Amino acid sequence: MSTEENTSMNEKTSTPQEVSTPIPGESAPTPNPSFETNSELKKLQDGVAAIRFELNKVIVGQKELIEALITGIVADGNCLIEGVPGIAKTLSAKLLAKTMNVDFSRIQFTPDLMPSDILGTSVFNPKNTEFEFKAGPIFSNIVLIDEINRAPAKTQSALFEAMAEKQITIDGKQYTMEQPFIILATQNPIEQEGTYRLPEAQLDRFLFKINIDYPTMEEETQILTAHNSRHGKDEMAEVKTILNAQDIAELQQIAKNVTVESSIINYIAKLVNQTRNHPMLYLGASPRASISILNAAKAKAATNGRDFVIPEDVKSIAALALRHRVVVSPEKEMEGISPDMIVQEMIESTEIPR
Image 1 (cartoon, rainbow, N blue to C red):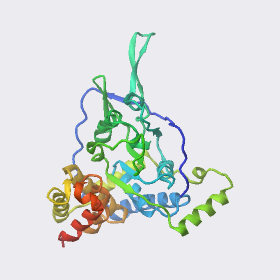
Image 2: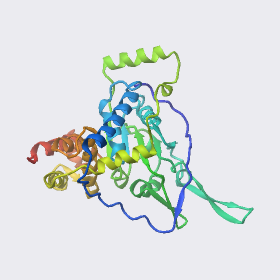
Image 3: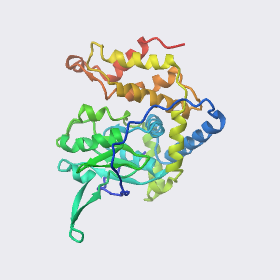
Image 4: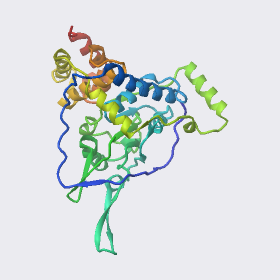
């Protein structure tokens, strides 16, 4: 782990693909009865282990952060990383992108950022007297949005369609994103001047919200030792590229083919339903939360070498998938009750399927 670099927006875009008809929603895959457990899962595990190894060259501690980011990539979901400045939020996202041979772009959100600065705009070409679409930095495979809560609601709304449907619509035309397409966003939990609370509809489009804290004394000593030993060399150079776009697509498909018993599905439904009737919650989780837990649990099972989901997979990612989708009632929030505390209470009170 090292101090985040405070760099300006670095755009790297890929050519958008225009389509004339809406992209239909992706249907849930049917479990593959001929799932080759040994070979397919071994390939996924090897890829995940290699990514872990590369990230651990630079990142000290933060095991939950690394595991959650990897699970999010395998589950094909967007991730929101929250923590105080200087604890490697941005660096971790950049290093993760470095392990994959795909297009990467970084967008620094500011209060004056406009939707066209993200999506792109139509520019008049006097040579052919026609408007041509110039793609924005959102057209990439891994998009890092730094300090996402510094942009106002108008700019945040530009991300809704891309985050949920992996496409954007401009001037009546739809443009699909090249796969993989994943947004990694960072934000500061301390409300400072020039920050805005993210809309609930946007928070619901993040698979995970990952909270990270200060390192321990021992970890901080390791950080200082590693930084001193580099003698000014860039830590990004230490990380090697492991996977390409096709590899990532294959790993994501392996996770989609993981078997889920009906008892596990009922268990997920019970957990999410409790959020809608809990006396301490003002707002419960949506069906998108249930789907997110299901997809993340399948990815977690696959990265752990199993072609089936167990209750522990669900329990391990429940807080990550629910903490940003529920709203604690004002009176309980004043008492210091957090979403994580409520989610943990629900997990403990819900009967585990046998």
